[in-house]
Image (cartoon, rainbow, N blue to C red; front, side):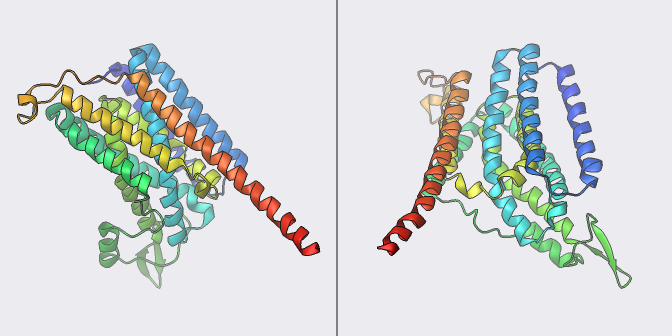
Length: 339
């Protein structure tokens, strides 16, 4: 199922591993709140790197896998932006000091990538053996798209999952942070700090989001390497995006609609692909339904760009209109009072 040369894949994993090591153990050891300029520079750097990486894929493997990567990266990036709503709530609930939030996000995202890697391997194994799993993936994405439209997401409140609740019962955890330390000592007794809970919370919460994103990316490419690297590049700039957009996330009012279009489109695409490779005996006698049209890769990319770009543009227009309305309101009230 791999579409890229093995040597290119190995070199990619080595470079990405080095980057995460430097980010965690060098940059991460200088706790600070990133400035707006720093955030913009980092986000621009990661976006350019993703574009260059896609260009490298195009050079070494051709246009099809490159377009698949770009489609997957844009989809995962858009879904990751939606994840920031929950990250903001987690940081607030656990009262994580702002100076160490960047480090917390770095570790949490690294844990999330490990979990996602396992999910991707399982998904690839299922797809290679059971083509009917596309029916399940497709139906789930269509259901998720409908939920986004009708406002069925519960991002406004965060609730600890079972793993975190169990962990609190079996180990000693303090209520206070000790810098970036996972362990601290009080009155000669060793305790875990809340950092452990925060790391696991961000990592495991992201896994919950992976139930949406992993099926979505498999609807765009079947290559596990492209699936994983799309996730990596989508998550790389997430910590800077967290600080840059943290106060503006509620302004992206049309983002859920844009995501619903993308997920709904990919869900339908998956069902169509499942019909093409059908082996279920109760559908067309176990034969593929070949009259169903195939969706070209370029069309997937076009739908994603238009849906997400349109949602972002519409959100910006509405935000400016609302700000203009607020600016005019005091003037109107002042004028009526003068009369």
